Length: 342
Ligand code: SF4
Image (tube, rainbow, N blue to C red; front, side, top):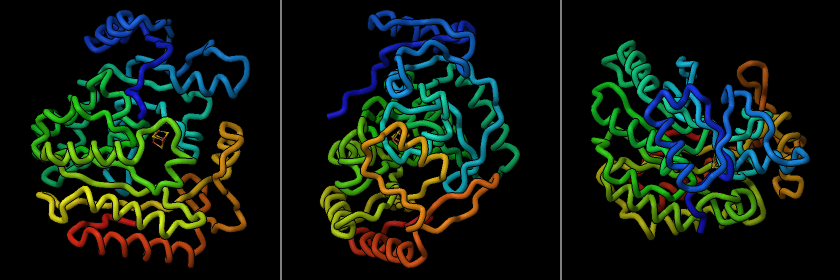
């Protein structure tokens, strides 16, 4: 069982202490006896412990930096939402395939931003620009926000903020089961709570440091009982020996736990495994013994934004993946909606 995250080391920007959450976190970590250091900027944390890159990477993943988010322009977050809601950056999990491996580069430590009110006020502006169309905000684009929220309660605040808005919706995805403090949030059905799931092989070999499948499903039941619209992201869908049976078992297990009809239909988002050239290099460095196969010859190259393409499955494999997984969903959850396969 993965315990709720507790940082081994905390850095705080002096400016963060001008915000109530900054002060609350400082008091909390002092009371927990955690070492606190000062950093002038959350973007430039120096002197992380460790004598080599391997150690530094692991120490960074258990370091929390408390800072003020300066950039209040939100990134787009297609296909699941219009905008990313930037409450935190980084994650304590050790998923080998994680896209944060490359986007975080030399800063794999976890950053939480204390100017939550300013961030939420900015989202009000984005909603106003599109109203009366609904604007969707994704809070897990750059972190697994649930994984640190038992410490900060920033996500809980955001859930209640969107619960009181007419033209906005919140969504996020997690691999962590520490959801109890979110169950009584006044969400008003405007937050879709999604869990990232995978088959036993992928979770066992590639998702170290995250809650196990049974814990995630248990948490999903609590969330569903609390009235949240619920979704599952099956990602990355990965071909390995026995993958068809592995994914079938996943859906069978899920089916045994959930009624076929829920108040709001369950959504499924399906994402096949992909990697970029730079990601492959970083993954091989950070997880040298990983079983993750990233053979460019077995994949096809798909051009992406900014000229950086990714390696996805060949067309025939891709079609088989989609057909197989969607087949399981239609069989086990005939009322569910498949939002997309990518
Ligand atoms: Fe990345 Fe999500 Fe795993 Fe964290 S839990 S390492 S964000 S894939």
